[in-house]
Length: 221
Length: 207
Image: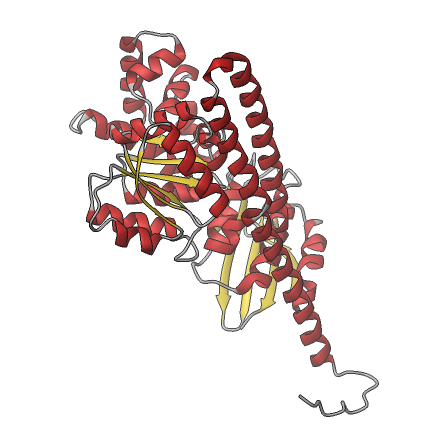
């Protein structure tokens, strides 16, 4: 893939460059801040931009940069790499876009396979969320929303957690060792219990299920 | 630059003492925030970069693939745990989210990790690292005691005073909160909420 990269930490930037090259990706732009990257990408096409969240323009330049890139190049995938996995940032990221977007911890992309898998899934239009964060959000819901979660069976919660990681039905089936048909059934139940009705397109409802869940945690305070 | 000799003074006026304590608190909170930034920009970045170099190492030596890969993944898992510990320490020093987004988001993130329901009602306005740090840790101190009933935290600015109302926590927490906000000239009052719970009211002067 054609990859653009902005990260202000030189050590991490250089390491990521080498790993990306080893994985066979083409680096079309590399910068220490968001403004430079946006300028470089005006003339160079890229499939995906990898952004640090906490970089210039301070304080959270990655988010501002992502908004500008999404507006200028709607088809470009966006991957945020950060030292922190926080639901606050996840919500802000999902406000920028709910397709071809990802948020992972910096130390969790340290292999060619994981890095390429993450980039490919984003390239395919998926939302990729750091599993640690997805797990925390689903397993520790805000207590006042426990009724919502309590309505879901244990298996449905497992499915929602994997949906929150951005996995496809096939991917969820593989993880849970069940048939894709069974996954479809669970997802239909989740949609029903979360009040997401059939007049909305399937993939849109998937994202809405995850968002409904995440927002219920944030707005329910 | 030559300084005028200070006039002799035995007992500084109370106002000066308040200002001195306040400056001291400001320095302390700023130092804690700087330490968190150093962890983020220094140690944490180095360790994250190491996980990338390790990944490259196992990729460049496919002949020894299986053993090397297992060893590398083991080390990477350990490095993740190192980083988790650094994050924990950073959070106790000065939560990065508090620095970047303020009291509302930082307290909500902390509330999300609590067993009991916690409602946070806070303005978007920023109050500086000292006031925000003191309020954040004062509220956190009440939450970590394992409060049994739903907790409500309402933060409002009224002219030059930041008012924090905490209900649903143990009345004993008032003392802990007072320790946390005293240097900033803050006061703590204990009352009763309409529901009959303890209601802790904190007032901190802010400019």
